[in-house]
Amino acid sequence: MTEESMSYNVGESAGASTESLLNDSGEVDEAAPSGPSALDPRLAPIAKNPERVEKVIVGLFVLGLLGFAAFGALYWHGGRQPQLEGVFIGVGLMSLGFGLSSWGKYLMPRGPFVEERHPLASEPQAQEEFKEALVGRGKYVLKRRGFLAGLMGLAATVFAIVAAFPFIRSLGPVPGDILDKTSWKRGSRLVTADGRPVKVDTLQVGGILTVFPEGHAGSAIAQTVLIRAADVSITTKPGRESWAPEGYIAYSKVCTHAGCPVGLYQEQTQQLLCPCHQSLFNVLDGAQPVFGPAPRPLPQLPLMIDSEGFLRAQRGYEVPIGPGFWSRS
Image 1 (cartoon, rainbow, N blue to C red):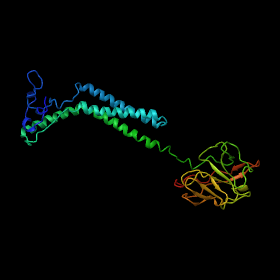
Image 2: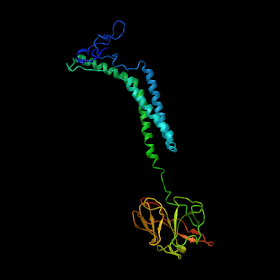
Image 3: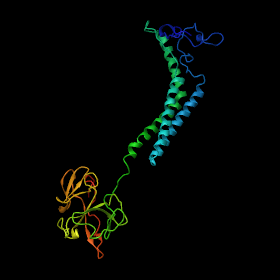
Image 4: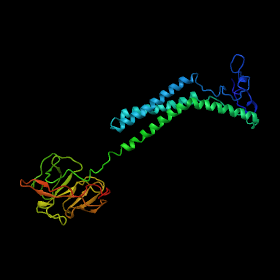
C-alpha cells in the first residue's frame, strides 16, 4: 500500500463503510477509499498476536514491580549491599522501560494518519460516522488495555515509594531521648578508653584525658573530658564546691553546638576548644562558652575520690548533653 493510498482525507472518504475496505477474498482493497472504521488496518496494533504481546508486557511490569520491591526491602533492612541493590533497581527500571516501549511500539495504532489540507471541512454525515468509528475503537482499546494501565500504575507507585527510601533511611534512626541520660550514675568509676581505672595521681596539672563510666568504655554519649586544672579543689559555680576534688574537672565531651567532640585544652587560658567550629569554653567558669557558635555550657560531671584513690562520679549529669537546639524541659 502506497503512502498516497493511506492518506487520511476526512472530507473525501469519511463516509466509506467497513465493508468497502474489503474485496471479495476478504482482504483489504488498496483501491478502496480509506475511511474510518474499527477494522481500519491503520488503527490496528503492529503486533501480529496482540494477546501474546500483552502477556509479555504484563510479565515485564510484574518483574519491574518485584525489582522495585526487592530494592526497597533490601535498603530498608540494612542498605549495606550496594551491588545487589543496584541489580534490583536496574531490573525494575529496565523492565518498566521495556514494558512501556513495547506497549507503545506493538500495541498502539500503527498509522500513519494524514489529513489533506483541502477541503478542511467534512460533511456532517461524514463527521458523525468518523466520530462513531473513533469512539468505538477507543472503547475497544481502553477495554483491552485497562489491565495494562492499572499494572503500570501500580509499578510506578511502588517505584515512587521505593525512591523515597534512600532519603528516609539516610536520615538514620530517630534519636529519641538518648541524649537526656547517659551511662553515668552515682559511684561510676572513671576509666580510659581501654578500660583502665583513673586514680588521683593519673594526671599532672595541665593534663587532659577522655574518660568513660566503667563498663561503658567507648560510649559516644557518655564520653567525658577530664582535666586537672590545679592540684587543689576547685569551685566552678556556686553549689559545685565538691565537684572538682584535687583540681580534677570533668565536662561532657559532646559539644553543645553540633555534637562534635571537644578535645583540645589550652592550659594557659584554661579553655576547652572544639576544633570543628572553634567554640571555646571557660574551664574554671563551668565551661561557659566565650567564643564560637556553642549556645550553652558543657554539662559538668560531679566527681569524688574514693578511699582507694580512684576517681568516681557523685551522680550523672544533671542536664542533657549535646547540641543546644534539642528541646529542653
